[in-house]
Structures are given as C-alpha cells and as structure tokens.
Length: 325
Length: 247
Image 1 (cartoon, rainbow over the protein chains, first blue to last red):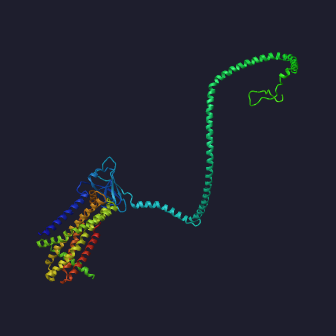
Image 2 (image 1 turned 180 degrees about the vertical axis):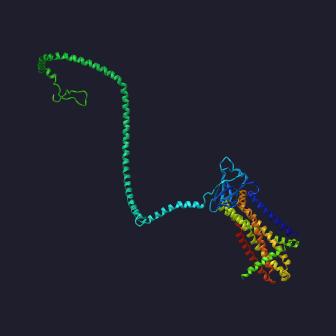
C-alpha cells in the first residue's frame, strides 16, 4: 500500500472513530448510559408536547419526553424519562408544568418536586400536569384589559375634537385666560414690590423701636435691680423700723396724752391768764412808747425791718443798713 | 432542451447502477488503490478548507446567534446550532467537492478517454467503465463522509472556544448543553447526506467525463456539465431531504 493510501485509511479511521464518539457523547448527554426512570402524566391535549421536549428541574435539563400515546378516551399519556437520582427527589405531589418563556423559545416541561413527605411511588409514577399560561392566553388577557382603555381614549379624542366644546375652543379660552393671568401676575408682582419696599421701611422702624425698647428694658432692668436692692434693705430695716415706729407711736401716744392733759389744764388757766395779761400788755406798751420817745433810747433802737427773708439763703438775714433809715 | 436533464439523470442513474453491480471489483488491489488515491485527493487534501469554513461558521454564526438569543436557549441550540451544523456540514462539504474534485474527475476521465484512443465500443464495456467509475465513486463518497465529520467537530469546537472567550461561558457547561440539545439521529443524517452528495458528485463527474466526443474541445464542456449537474444534484437531494426528514 502506498503512503497516500495509508494516509487515506488513517483519515477515514479517525473520522469514523470521531463520528462514533460524537454519537456516544450525544447519547451520554441524554442520559443513555446512566440509570434512568420513567414517569408519566395524562393531559387532554398534546399541544406543545413532542418526543424530545426538554424536562427541567429547577431550570436544569434533566431529561426529555420519551413518548406520547393517545388513550382510548382521547386523553394523552405523556411519558418522561429522567435520571434515577432526580426521580428519587420527586414527592407524591410532584407536578409538571408546560412552560414557554417567549415566542422563540421552545416549550419545556418544568417539574415541581412537591413537598409531600411520601416519595413518588416507583410502581405508579404518575404526576399532575399544569399547562400553564400560553402566549395566546396572555395576549387575550392583554386585549381584554386594553379594550376599555382604548374605548376611553377614543371617547376622549372625540370629545377633544368637538368644534364647540372641544380642544380648539378650550385652547382659545385658555389662551385668553392665560393673558388675564399674565396681567394679574404683573399686578401682583408690582404689589409685591411695593409691599416689599414698605415692609423694608417698617422693618427699619421696628428695628429702631426694638432698639429703644431694648434700652428701656435695660434701664427698667437696672431700676428693678435697684428696687430689689432697696427692697432688700427695706426688708432688712423694716423690723427695726417697725419696732422704732411702735416705740415712737407709744411715745407719741404718751405725748398726746400729756398734751391732752396739758391742754385740758391750759384750757382752764390760759384764758384767765390771757385776760389778766391784757391790762399788763397795755401798760407795757405805754411804757415802751414812752421809752422810745425818750432821749437817748430813741437813737439806739431802730424800728424792726419789714423785708421778707431771701429764698437763696437759708439764713434769714436782716439788713441793718436800710438806705431809708 | 427539456429532455436533456432527463437524459442526463437517466445516464447518472445507469452509471451508478453499473458501479454498484460491479462492486466486487473493489477486491482488486488496483481498484482499491485507485479508491484510496481518490480518497486522499478529495478528502484528506480538502480537510483544511472544510475546517476553515467550519471554524468560521462555529465561531462567528453560532456565537452571534447565541449571544443574541441566549446561551441557554433550547431553541437556538437545537434549531440554529445543530440544525445549522446538520444542514451546513454536508452542503459545505459538497460545494468544496464540486469546486475541487468534480472538474478534476470529469477532466481526468475525459482525458483518459482521449489519450488512450479508446473507442466508444470499448468504453461501453462494463468492466472497463467500472474500473474508472467505481474507485472514484467510493473515494469521493468516503471523502464526503470524512469531511462532514471534520466540519461538525471543527464547528462545535470553534463555537465552544469562541463562546468561552467572547461570552465568558464555561466550556464544559456549554458542551453539556450542546450535547443535551442534540438529537442522535442528526449525526447519521448528516453523514448519510454527505455520503449521498459524494456519491452523486462522483457519478455525475464520471458520466460527463465518459460521455464526450473524442475531441479536446469537449473537455471543458464535460467539466462545466459535471459542475452544473453536481450542483443541481446537491440542491435536489437537500430539498428532498428537507421534505422527507422532519426537522
């Protein structure tokens, strides 16, 4: 055999081996070389299900639909093939749900393992089936919800396009209203400016008044301090004063009593004395007049001054050099 | 004009049937050596071209599709990746054979006929004809199978490496998804298609090489007819496969 022939044979042998390995890998990927178990469910339609449909557990592909069989009562018996380890995780209330995530994605069977304490029986591994919501059902729901909204929008647009009460007249009115509003806003702005000016003046005045009030309060505070000190002193002196006043009042009372006694005595003796003194006074006056007129007494004794005492001087002075004398 | 393709198709069928009938000739060492030579020139020497196409397809098309649709997308893996590999591997292989080997075989056979001055009576001898046709058919058919396997491996490997580099996905996890999404029958189907394409291309090339007038100017006509006939055959077979085999 030539070298070319040997190379060709080697190439063919390698290719066949690789093809066999690829097949084996695919079979292995489908769990053909691991222990597997079957389970089944019954549904009323095989829609979305085909042999080979992926079976997933918690999002992981664990197997595939191995068979679909139409039963005599027209129900469909669906058989799933999954690894034995995964089968042992399923509980008696396990169920399968047909899911189609989007338009492009093919449908998959998601198995929910269940929470029952009892495992899925191996002799009758039948689980429940839930078809889930299809895209058409979701679309129908969306249509049902959108239809009333679209009708409202249609009514709204019809109302807005009305010639008398629609959007045009409304915009016209709103335009004039906005013009009025603009004028009002300008007036309010001028008023606000004026108010701001006046308030500034009032503020200045109020500030001055507050300053004066603060000073007055300060003085008042000082006076209150002094009054408080006086009151303290008064408080300290008051008991003594009261004692003194009491003694004074007692003395006054005694003096009044004495005065009353003296006045009572005087009321009897003074009138008589005054009656007795009148002739004596008259005699004395005549004696004095005679003395005055007699020399040298007449030059030694001057007549009493008639001027009033000075206001600026506490000592009442009597001028001895009267110019007229 | 209308009868020409029919006549050619009948001729292709007759040539193939004759080759199958004379399959015992493969026991002869010279026929086996001729088949191995054809396998080397058509299969082994074309491996770089097929590998390049496969790497481009796997690293660019598969990575782009999965980056758009999602690396865990069952549909993308099953239909786009494996569907693409299943369909593209035999087609790409067939096109390369049509480009490289079909003209070569047609011109070689035509030249053999011209150089040896064999008249039509001799060429109508079944044994003589099958000594020319059978090793080429066997060689090209097995070459096509070899190239399909090479394409599939190169495409998958390139896709895994490119996805690992570009999309930052673990190679082993992605390989598990690839294998999980694949169907086993896709491998024999693609190999079978490659085998059919190779067989058909070789038969067509031999037929047009054999059925020329003994003039040099007929060689280009034979080459053109072989190429066009091979392309038409590939398209027809692919169409029939698509119709008969469910995706």
